Image 1 (tube, one colour):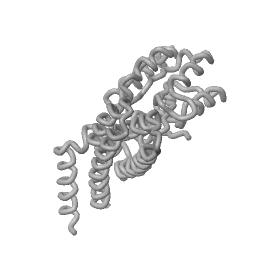
Image 2 (cartoon, chains in turn cyan, yellow):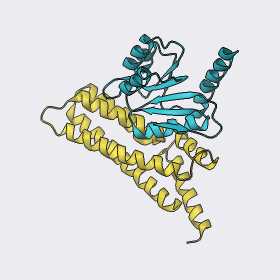
Image 3 (cartoon, rainbow over the protein chains, first blue to last red):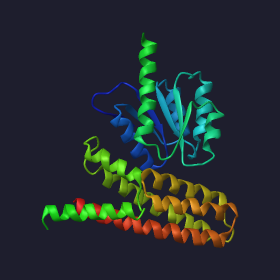
Image 4 (cartoon, rainbow over the protein chains, first blue to last red):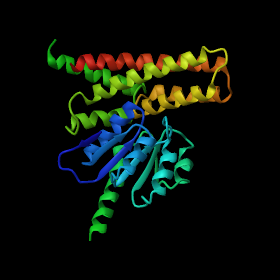
Length: 134
Length: 140
């Protein structure tokens, strides 16, 4: 599912989250930050999107999901050569940071993620995209 | 009832939810998103409804697991973790804290402890569910 806000920054965000209310809150934050948002319900759906050739600037992963976890999906996506995509782990699990960072995530943010935390992350992705285009 | 009076009732309800620690800054942020016009009106109600439905289901699943002759504590862990995530995302602070309290009992594999912890989770959830439902009625 793809969601788009008015005045898009053209930052393509993939949100990988199995819990409905968490998906709604984070996707709303991303839309508020003018991202184009695609939703996936688990790690396998995220991997499948990359296998289909879909491109994203940033991917936010929950940790524990059915079928495939966030860290498992990061391993597979990085193995496809997707080294430029910013991968962010998001979890309420106290031990999640190591699980994400050890498999190649760029960042870990504990749940609940706040707008004040997400805003600078998206801005950094925007700045990097602009620099890459120069 | 006049709109102003309903608004006053709603504000009093929300203030009470904050001062009693039932909800935290995360809930405030969701409200701000709606009030700033960044989200559709009804956004907070939609989030609250989703949370209530998710939490109802998760609590029922945990109860069913604890009702088994042999309890799968790993599954209990997974469900409590889900509820902790969803409650923290909506700002239901007391439910989140009850989930954090739960951990010591499934880690100790104590069925009795888990049942007591579940009772606390259920109690805190019922309280916030009632408040959310009243909030949504007043907003309508």
